[in-house]
Structure formats: C-alpha cells, structure tokens
Image (cartoon, rainbow, N blue to C red; front, top):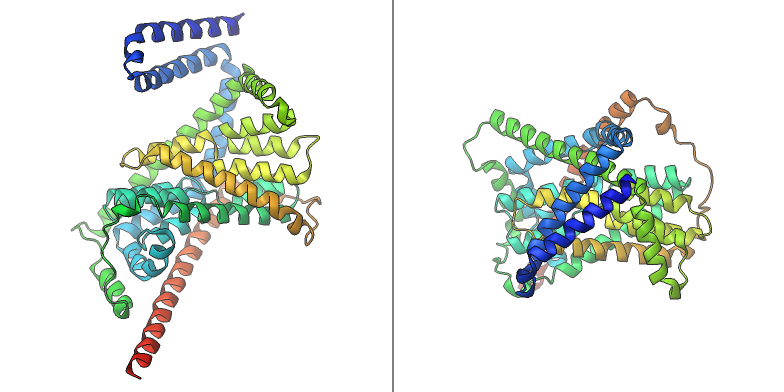
Length: 438
C-alpha cells in the first residue's frame, strides 16, 4: 500500500507540474523547467522511500560509508593532495613543456594534459576530472582544451579492474589484462576523436624553439609558483581543497548507495528491465544481459557483479558487457565529476557523450579481441583473494600505502618520459642541422 501511495503522489505531482507549465512547454522553454522539477520529484521520492524503509536505508548508507573510508579515502586522498601541490608549485608546467611535442599532435591539448592523463589511468575516478578542473580554473587550459582533455581523462583505475572485477568477480586474474587494455585503448581513441573538437578555433602559438625545450622547462620550474604564497599556505590550501573534494565524493557514494538500494526495493530497476526486454524482443537479447546492463548504468560495481554472476551468458559476452559498464562508469561517478567540473565552463553533456563513446569502444575491443586473447591464456580458474580476508584497519593501511607508491611511480615515470622526449628531440634537431649543413 505504501508503495502505491508513493507512485500515486508522484504521478499527481508530475501532472500538476506539467499542467502549471503548459504555456511554457508550448513556447519551447520546457526543458529547463522540466529538469528542475524532475530533480525536486527525485528528492521527494528519495525522502519518502527512506521514511518507508529506514532500516534498509541505514544499512545501505553504512555500506557506502565503509567503501568510502576503507577504499576511497586512502586511494584518492594522496593523489588529490599531491596533484594540488605539483600544480601550484609549477612542476606540472615543467612536465607540460617537455611533453608538449607528444600531447599536442595526438590529443591537441597542452603538455600539462599528460599529468592529468597519467594520474587518471593510475588512480581512477574522479582524480582526472579534478586535475582537469584545477588546470582550467588556473587558466592553464582554454575551455576547448579542457573539454578535449576531460573526454579521455576520466577513467577507472587498474586496481579496481584487476582486483575487484577480474579477481573478485570473474575469479580470473588474466581477464583483468584484457579489460584494462580495452579500457585504456578505448579512452585513447576517444581522446583522438575529441582532438578535432572545435579545431577551427585553435589559437595556440606554436612552441618556441624545440632546441631549448629542456632549458625552458627548468626555467619554468625555477619560477615555481606565480603567487607570493609561502609553502605553508600552498600546503594548507592543497589539504583543504583535497579534503573538500574527498568529502564530496564520499557524500555521493553514500547517497547513491541509498538510492540504488531504494530502486531495488521498489522494483524500479526490474521495471526498467522489463520494459527494455519487451522493446528489444525482436533482437532476442537475454533478460539477464539487459538486467545487468541497467544495473550498470546506475552503479559500476553492482552492474559488473551482476554480469559476472549471471547464468545463460557466455564468458565473452559477460566480459564485453562488464567492459562497457566500466567504461560508462555509472551515474554515481558522473554525479561526482559533474560536481567537480561544475565550477568551470566544461560542458557536462559533452563529457557524458565522451563516456558513452568510451563505453562502446571498450566493449567492442573486448568482444572482438577476446577470441585471440583466450587462445593465449586460460581465463577461468579459481583465485584466492587475500585482500578480502583483511580487517578494515589493514585494508585502509594497505590501500594508503599502495596509493602513495603508485603516485611516486607515476611521477618517476613522467619524469623519465619527459627527459627522454627532450633528449630524443635534441638528437633529432642535431642530425637535422647536420644534414642541412651538408
């Protein structure tokens, strides 16, 4: 009875809003108003659901809180603080000057984009979006460049794809190699596609003499921060901004944990699945595939788990759908990213379009490469995951240590690649001059 009351009230509210805004609808001004009222409706619906299912809401919120404290905080906080410090101290501009010859021809973005991309593929959501937003706010990127960069700098991390999905869900460490490769190849393809976004508006100046690339990079590094802030203020601002971001991420994780639980209890996900099954009946798609797909649209972990546990679906299809879900990343992650880039002029709609392309490319690559990949590896075998046996305290320490080690590894890798790029460019210029003199 309580569920029926919610549905009736919701329908009446929708009817009243549409009726009251009828004139605006006919004038083509309905979309903005409709989205505003839809948000109000969702909030009312969520509040009513929590009142009806208080116990389940608390349990779901607790699950989200545990994930945030044991996994998200230790995994992301070092990346957030470290990224803020490196950007404010001018280290990212140092990398940017050296890596401009790579990033500009391939992705049509400044060399600083290499830092965002490296951090994104190492740490996962939403570190890449945070760095792109920071670079845009500091006017290191133009609006067009930031839009291009965010299209391929919002990726999942390898620890989630290999540890959680491959080992934890599919019980095969080898499947993670395929999923990770498809995921990153897919995002690179999207980045190349978006390099043509508003290309006619490009107004960047060609790089200064490449012969003095390394010298200019070290000159930029010696200048450091443009402001007169002391290192104490810079460190304090980095910690404060990072904590604000991590709190925001935690709030979204807990909120969507409750929302998804309510959608399950009210059978809304089942209702959407049933509608899609009817619409896609001519294609003879398995209901389990559609159900997993719908769940994955809302939340990555839940959708991937349903795919792995589904019956009547071959392994190739399962892995391809899981790859699609990871590429899409779920509404929970999109809400986090939208909140971060909302402070800038980066368009959320284009970001979502890029994620749709990323999901499609990742899935297609996985599906077509799977037969070749399976010939070289035995994909299904039991794996003992000792991580699951750890206490919450040990999980926190383990993830924190791993995150710091990854951050240091990324910095060292960027430094090596940057110096190698400058060295190879210098060698190229040397031989080019030698041929010219002849």
